[in-house]
Length: 268
Length: 110
Image (tube, rainbow over all chains, first blue to last red; front, side, top):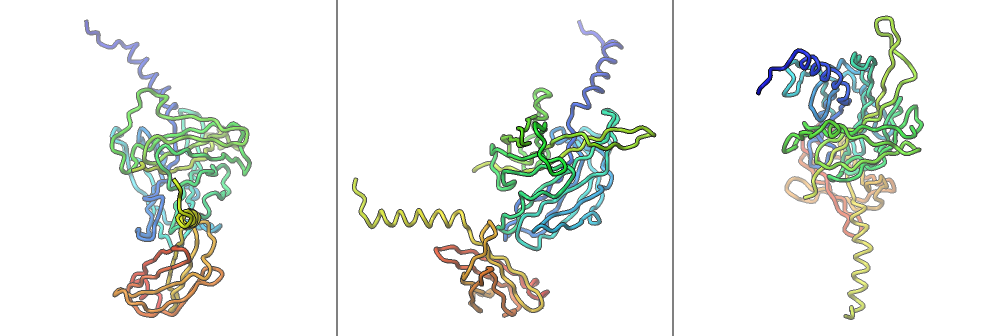
């Protein structure tokens, strides 16, 4: 016998959806058109700056970041003024959300680490602000220098695996820093970017725990994860800031994330 | 099976140098500024290619000039021709690579 849903079950479902929402991991995303620029490649890198759920492809509204730049040969360049506003959404989102794009001309060989400090994002479901300091490295013209250097952000992941030229199933190892010091036993969330260019089919998680992978760092803040699919992978180490932000006259906690993106390719 | 001594030596030598060539690919980067073409030759880890031979060809593959890199891996020369330039770095032991400078880039750097 087919039963129509009772009011109780509808309310229960709605509650479940509400409480389920915070389980989804937010990720700052900084995705370049290519992680490696060779001598015969176009010398302009397009970058997208987003705040998303990488596996589910959901966008969140992102206002203009506080800081956006690149470090190359130990020199920082401010690129904030180059950001252009764009709109996007996942297939199951009806509303359009703001993200940011830019194009960066590669002028010299070496590693270019792009970094973004977003404007704090108010998350009512978690009653806190979120700031994800996000980085990605683009290697240019055969000179592999700079990728292991810190930018000097409040919190950041320092790659210990060279973060480009990675095969699928490679192990990515990084160290989580907070104010320049390793974070013992830091928790690191990992997600696959379903919208990775070249992803042959959407990854559909069979159960919630598959969406976000979780690893814990050792006593030196060092973590590792083997990436089982070609495309972009986001690593996010979350900590609580020792500062607060006023929201409607109340002091609210701030989740600060150190996010790093790496790209893998299938061996063939 | 007995491996002839010369073959064994060759294998050993190729192992030694073959390994080096793979791990130490040479690169050349060039740009044009104030009427001069500047080249930089380096290994992936940033070490300069010292005393490497640099050969400059035009779009018809004619050799325009050649020179050698200094201790910092640098070699500069006045623009030899406003054309697509192919610049080759030829270091020892078969370390070789090239870089293309487009005519427009050469023109812009006059």
